[in-house]
Length: 319
Image 1: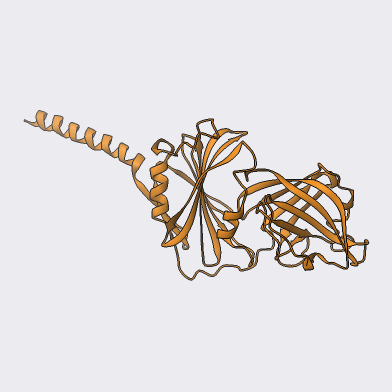
Image 2 (image 1 turned 180 degrees about the horizontal axis):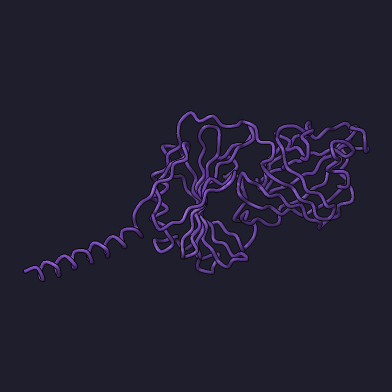
């Protein structure tokens, strides 16, 4: 009798161990940092990040999920920027597959899906954007893709689609959290041909180590004229050498607000507008995104605006 009991007990322990092991792979865990909370699959490995990254999850299949919290300039409109942005339509290696409105935490959110062919091979990328407490939140999901940027393949369960949907559904942002209203470095500009590397600020043209985004102009990647203004002789003179730029030279903007890298190409240089200042120019919408680099003219005076005209030639995810 004892022998039978031992056999039965061993079988019960084996079954419990087996089901318990399987359960560990599919069990739900909970993330909560006092502001952001959500459920996520137990098989995901999480790592707390530094701003703007809140946390990043990975798994053994090459999946990556990053949760971001982004401070924004006072003139930035999330819905407008997403609707005007040319990301996913400029180059063949980064194509927009679908976009739709969803609901996160009772808030209108925007879901964008891309096919990407990059240095890490073909990937599928899904972004979910929403806003609360005067801050932008974003969840970015990437997984190995199908190798065809024009296939429009849905992210299915094998790529964590249902797990991601469950995570998004459980998202909660605490009400009334105090967040900064000013963003003094929401992007970076690099102009390799004149060795220029600066932050982009919406606070003041005199912000140390930065050029000024004119608030009446457009934002990176938007179909309109984006204007960046920099001193030519004072405050570290960020635009001291822009008069030397030639057609074909590149201007690169790494934008935290959209998590994209925008590469512009100089079209023309030396547009001098006497009696005008960059802040007084009326910036126009356009069929394709434009970038204007604006400084004073002559050097050391502000009798005119010196402008370099650029056009967008490439967009890729910000790594």
